[in-house]
Structures are given as C-alpha cells and as structure tokens.
Image 1 (tube, rainbow, N blue to C red):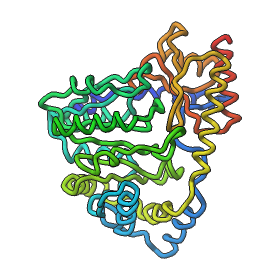
Image 2: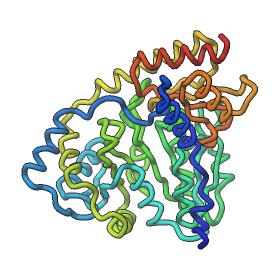
Image 3: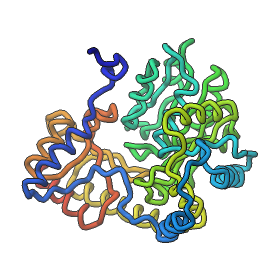
Image 4: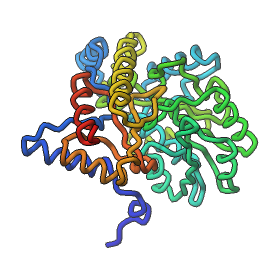
Length: 379
C-alpha cells in the first residue's frame, strides 16, 4: 500500500534524530546536558493545579462545546478586547490542543489544494508540514541575521503570487528570539491588505520579551484579516496540559471550529477549567528568571568567543556554527556524541549554519553545557 503523498513529502524531524541519540546515551548512563527543550522548566502555578483538582471534584469531566467552554471563550475574548482596545466576542475564539492545533485548524479552514502560504525563515518546524498536509505549498522568505532576523518587506512581496492565501508570522520568534518592530508589523499588514492575504500571527511567546513590551499584530490590524494564535504553554508553564486558542474573524473562527469538531471535539475539559484560573495568576517571576538566564547565556558565550544572535524574546539563542568547518547537523551530532550536549541543528528551522540553544533550564545546567561547548570549540 502506498502512503499519502502529502505525508511522504513532509521532512523528517532533525530534532527527533538528535533527541534519539541523547536518549540512547542517557540509557547507557551518560550525563547528557539537554539544551533542546522548548518548554519552561517551572512547575505549573499551584492555583492553576488547584483549579483543575476542583473541577474534577465537581465532576466537570464531560464533553464540552467542541470550541471550548463558554466561560473560557468569553474570558479570552474579554482579555483580548481589553488588551488591544478592540471588540472581540466569544464566537471569534476556538480553544484547541495547544497553539499547534490552533494553527492547523486555521490553515485547514482557509486553504484549498494548490494555495500558497508564505513562511518566514528561520521558522518553527511544524508550519510547513501542516501546509503540505493540506495539499498547499509553502513559500519561504529568508530573514537574515544581519537584519536581526526580521524579514524585508520587499522580499515578502516578491514571494506573493495569485495563489498566495496567507502569511505566517511568529514574534517573538522560535528559533531566533527575534522580535518584530511595530514598523515591520505595520508594513506586513499593509502588504496583506494590498494583496488580500490572511495574516496568521503566532504569538505564543508574547510574555517573553526582554527589551520592550510585546507588540501584537492585533495592535495594528485591530483584528482585520488577522488570526491570533496564543496559548498558556509558554506563559504559564502548561505545555503538557495542551491548551491554546485562536482568535479570528467570525467566519474563519466558525470554520476552524468545524475542523476541530471533526478531528478532536473539545480539548481536555479539566484543562479548560484550569485555564480559567490562569488569567488571575501572576507569572512575571518566570519572565524575570528567563531574562536572568538570557543574560547568563549571552555572557558565557561571549566569554568563550562563540558567535551568536542576541535574542530579544522567547528563550532560545541561535549559535553560529559556520566557523567550525562542518554543517550544523554534524556539529550537533559531534557535540552530543563527544561532549554530551544536545542542541537543535539550525537546519530543522531552515537555518543551516546555526544551532539552537534553549535556556529554559536551570542556571547550573546552562553553565555545565556551555563549559562543554567551550571544550568542544577548543577555547
């Protein structure tokens, strides 16, 4: 039996390849410093956990509306309305299994076979596979390190064709930690209006900016031709709870809700009630710790003379490995096998020549990992 052409066209995960090597080393008793994690290492705040327990005690364990319980959708809509000074209603919200499903639901709601979606590189690993699964085509626009990994508007416009349906933006960015300026976002919005494009704005790292307040595409577009993707995984250390959401124009939100209804129905009911409490929890201490870790990592990398991009947001640092005379995949494999430090090859994000280091782990672990990188680099 032949497999789906769409699935066969999906790239193999380079992250999983590195993690498989790391897991095998650990099984053999090797002390591996894993700096690949894309999740906060903090426990989920206790009030959120207690809210989940309370929901179970109240037997709130049944099916819900497939797009989310009304209370949560209303609370998200109120939060967005207040924060961005616009009128957002609950019927514009779909609560999903993390931000990942929110993105897929959106793409499935608007794409037809042969449509094109513009993706800005370096990019998160799942954007293109989602597009491919829907028989559409990903068109890549490269953002360069010398431009702060922020895209040039003329390069985006060159990539637009009669088949272009949407553009995905991600700020703060995974994997680079780049944060787009208000000017860049405004120009992208004007471009979208001019060419009748949908903007899918992935803002799951919005609480993690270190030099400025987060600037949302909603601030510029006021919701016009914009789908906001967000969630609680990064902001409230709720990765395993699997909860994200989208906010979109009503027509798109209803279509995305229809997609979800037939794929998963509602997400975990208990998680939804826990997320209600999340809006009342102060998580600024996480941002403070991440900022401290960011300063530590940048300082240590500078001391050993390794080139890197200084992140303005999220919790990643892109290390330039081009000076080591090998490609990023070989660099990461050798670093892992010989010095037992796991990084993600930049090629996984369409950024060959780089390796992504996550500082979503303890200061002790970061110091140990960078000391081993120093030895590997012969510094």
